[in-house]
Amino acid sequence: MDSLSKAFKKRPLKPEQEVVETADELLIDGFAVRFVSKVQTEKIGKDVVKINLEFFAKSYR
Image 1: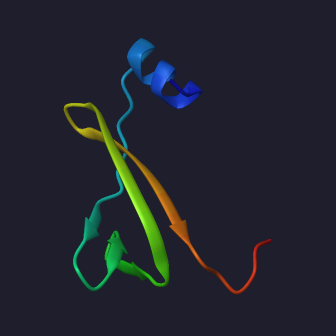
Image 2: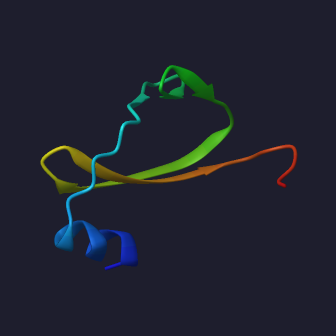
């Protein structure tokens, strides 16, 4: 279990982001994330989902 999941068990998190995955795209709060190669989800609470996302980008800063 990672540190974020452990923290959730001690004090509930209240994330605000909404993620939608369709056959064609992945949206985070309505913004498309392109070139997604992998998505893994794990429900860790009633209203909390841990999402691991892998995608390709032009650069990282």
